[in-house]
Amino acid sequence: MQYHPISGDVIHADLYEVDLSARIQVSVPLHFVGKAAGVVRGGILQPIVREIEVECLPLDIPQFFNLEVSALDIGDSIHIEELQMPESVTAIYESNFALVTVATPTVEEAPAAAAAATVEGAVAAAPEQTKEGTE
Image (cartoon, rainbow, N blue to C red; front, side):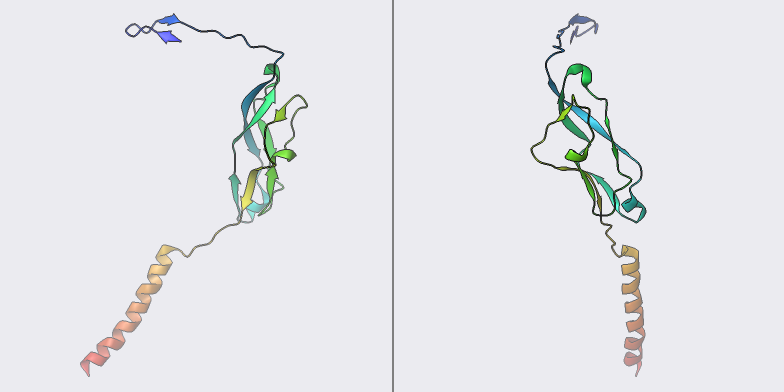
């Protein structure tokens, strides 16, 4: 579209005709459905991709793919070959890459707890130094 620089009126529009018999490549979003069992146990659901490239006819383009993640445990993943697609839709991929995984939870010592332990150690050592200095 081209617009007039001052008034903002449309001055030109290009229109394209889509060939309904030719397959096209489009990106289709993934919707993750359910709560993974691994997430309930403390894991982290990590989507690796949020959309995939597919090839299909223009009238067969899906709005999205639902990806059921309820059965995933910690360390499990869903690969593109496991995705259910209509027969007229073909996923474009070079390898059987993972779409989503449940990562192992990482536990770090809280910074406040580490600082408190350091302060307690310093306070415990301080009275001994004071006693030695007064004798």
